[in-house]
Image 1 (tube, rainbow, N blue to C red):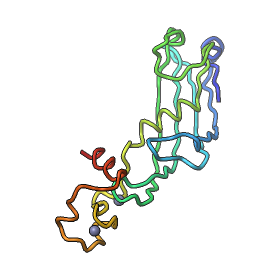
Image 2 (image 1 turned 60 degrees about the vertical axis):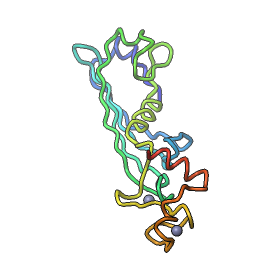
Image 3 (image 1 turned 135 degrees about the vertical axis):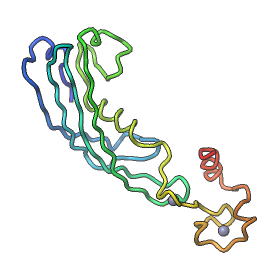
Length: 166
Ligand SMILES: [Zn+2]
Ligand SMILES: [Zn+2]
């Protein structure tokens, strides 16, 4: 959804509210995805300093545990608020995604906010021990000797995980 913020500065006298459904399923959140359409609430409210825009949503994120590769399903919520001043509309460094002519790209804003909420490394649980580099099974389930479990991982994907965690 594009919200004509510039127009709202000129004509908006009362709060505006919109409920929208945003499809973020094609977007990548550091390897995790949001497969279901996201229900979001967008509001714009004229105030003395400018316009307060706000965005609320909640979504279930699907990813893989960075340690054991098990699927991870977790809900994340977005609750963002921003006071926009009229001069912001012409500022190329303004942090909200504005299109030409002062239109706010609400879908893109929602993506950015989820990007901010979702950690780049997901783990299934705080106590996850990860995979054994020798047998590839979960450490909790494998019967390899301790030295083998500590050995350098041979699998490239495990090496990447290891470097991520260091
Ligand atoms: Zn795990
Ligand atoms: Zn093992």
